[in-house]
Length: 279
Length: 339
Image (cartoon, rainbow over all chains, first blue to last red; front, side):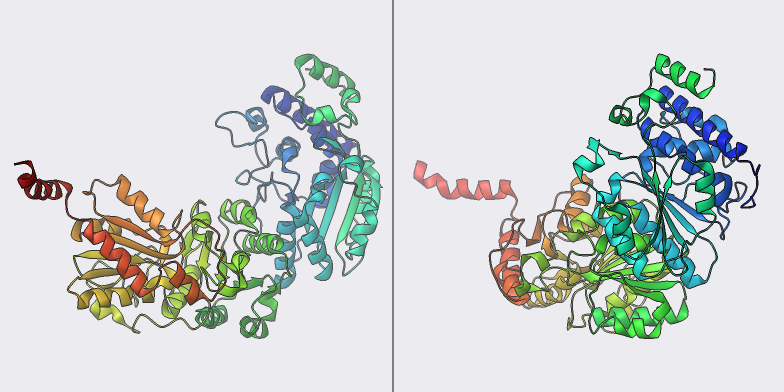
């Protein structure tokens, strides 16, 4: 298995991993002429720390019973998860070229059956309830694995997310960790304009979660937060990661447009230039 | 039926530690037997059916066999997408159990009538849809669904349904049909044989179907009576045999005639090469009732009583005469007027 503290301790490896996720993701979305680049880029650093440090997973044994479970609830950001899974060796990187193509195993929304993918999502608000079931099962089986769920801010509009928030707090699921990619932009508007979540942390806390807020692009802060879960024994952990949609590509940052637009070849050249990668 | 279900579930849970029960804050006086005996395998998810269903899926994906339990439409329609995406797509071992199928909660009103659930559930891939006809079938279906991996919908009646099957009707059952003793999902049980017509019933209409068969017998009409406890996968062979060997088919369900058992049987008949037989779906019209009343009152209003069904059957059999014969006869009588 991959020890939780592997890698270079100066964090260089995490930076590289985050970089690879961004590069793969942009290339995939460009080739596929698909969308959700902004949603992938905002969580690239979160995935890097999860797969580079926090998660106890084994790419050679994706079904290892004691593995930590990772549920990507914002299934539309599939490209980024496929990218990190390929980087970690769950499947060959060559698969990434098939993303979104006819006959591919890699659908536009995250799909099980791909090594390393626990569950299919895509319809929002499904991930946290599923993760609650897994965490409850682990508790009752006295298994040591943890369940991590990565949510978008937009899907916190869903009633099912709130049902699960109440449930996890009530059942003291301290083996459950929610990370929210709080990039402040949802499908067709800014969160504060569409359906404001603030005071966001207070809402989770009111449902009996132990909450921390963090800069979702600060790798060492992320590493430190994710290595200290549960934040409070007997409570589920919620990490609100303040992120920037499209992070890493200047013209995509904080722009709703890049929830939808697929980067052209010129766009891609510009993006890769900023990321220090050649086409 | 719910008593038979919970008794069986407790028994199965004692034998198989994977069996769990997640309820949506319903089942007072029913689920305590399970909760008290297996507190670590029982969860009340609260009044939150979406979460109840997804939690069940998450638990099932962690190696458990999980029943969700609520009443009427709450565990099906309220959380339909969780059943579709979380349960069925992942082929998770979740069995959705609903108490009060059809009009069981009569006077509580339309919100509590489960009248489209079979149609909706049967549209999903990977799922087995079962509506037991009596407490014994409820018990046997529960056992079979625990033994069979994959998603299922178990549509139960409420309470006090009469026992239709004798405890071991195997001897009365010709080979080729499932007897109650060797209950098989997807295999109809024949309760009476005849070649004048076939009554195919599901769920709570079973005892009525048997009574209708007996009344028909008194008038010299011999009906085959099938319990189609499994609507998906449907026992296609039994439907086609009925079409070949008997002269009419009538389906009976406490459900809308749109999309339920009747539709499932019609699909088979329409696509088969068997010669067309007179066919009638008896159930509820596709409309919301404005009537208030008990299950029996409402069934009477929709002619789902023995007498109501007999009247429908008589009408169907009376239009059974082949058209050419009718035409010839009319002409023969009509002849003198032309002279």
